[in-house]
Amino acid sequence: MATWFITGASRGFGLEIARQALERGDKVVATARKPQDVEDALSQYGDRLLAVALDVTDAAQAREAVEKAVEKFGRIDILVNNAGRGVLGAVEETSDAEFRSVYDTNVFGLANVTRSVLPVMRRQRSGRILNLSSIGGFRSVPGFGVYCSTKFAVEGLSEAMRDELAPLGIQVTIVEPGYFRTDFLDATSLHTEGQVISDYAETAGAVRQAVPGLNHAQPGDPVKGATAILTLADAANPPLRAQLGSDCAAEMDRKIAQFREEADAWRELALSTDHDDVQGAV
Image 1 (cartoon, helix red, strand yellow):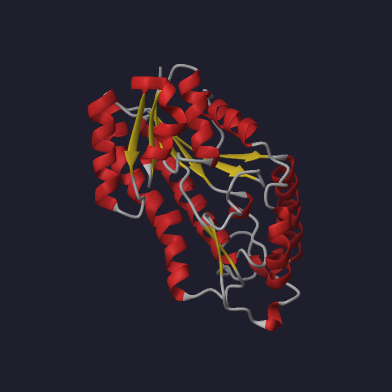
Image 2 (cartoon, helix red, strand yellow):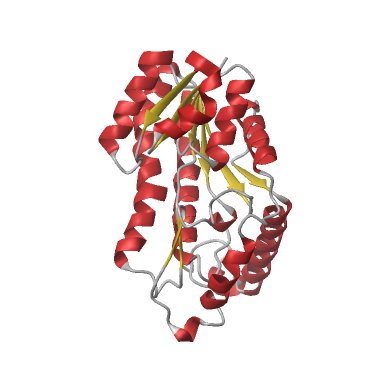
């Protein structure tokens, strides 16, 4: 019976992961800005659920939430860093305040929670960390550049953490969902910038216009996605990266092919910059 600590657990992936973990008999610390929403959705699971208030941008509150988790259940086996938000607009259109706000949640918030949980896992010499990235964590697109940059940051942190924590018995996996029918494209999760620059009409502007029609018509099933995340949490040898959704898998294949083609085309330039005494220099 594992103990989960899940951020952003009041809806979407977070809520469904919590539900499925509880359904199979695990214990769950489900955190949200409004924990009552979690309790209303999952009250039938009784004492195996602990709903805790947590704004991930508040480091002190993150520490308090972890303390409550350990006081209640004694340990934390699986951390799911799921809380996040987005912003829609060209990079130039995005205000400094909104730019920083998205980073505060998606990057610094994830770091706050992880730093609070890791002392518990290090004492245990065991644990799993599942960091929710995105299809946008390896492929950025017009209109979502700021959001995608936060997920690129999550991937960089996660790669380093995987190597840092493996000797301590703690495993790290980056989860890269494609487009799922969650509430992510709702105004409650996605802020659309008010500034519109006409020069971006055919790029970021086109994406801005298309997004409303995509909401709740995405190909991914959140229930199946949550089941896949539980599978990753149980895996004896989990991957560094896991793509969820046919759209995400296809985009990863395209990205790899693009990398290979570009690297081959510019290999001579890359090798030309070594000192002459380095073996293999051009």
